[in-house]
Length: 161
Image (cartoon, helix red, strand yellow):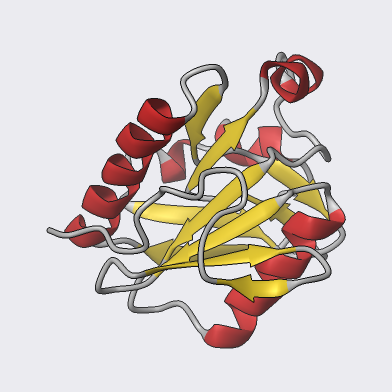
């Protein structure tokens, strides 16, 4: 059992695997295989975030400590101020302002709904969900589902392959 994210990172059994690895609140691993589409959508979102918000930091698989274990949003954007609070840590309880989940075929709705709430609890200002067809939905705390990002109103709601 891995109780700390650093223990998992040092385990050679997970080196180079094509999957998202997170933990639940008891330290059990949650391993989700990813597809080529997952990688494509993640990369496209990274490029678009860098274009629309070049003054911040864009990351992939950002480690985040939550009340339900260690999670790692697929793509994140944070301001330089939030990045300064997070940098030089293996795991941080401070969420980036934008957290994006890119769905894989194995994802279940209740898991994604839980992640949205967990990211908000840790301070995320927006959570985006990119579905299997590249459609993006935007969530804002206390508002819920919105038609567009409040931080980037011109961000497309569809990523095309």
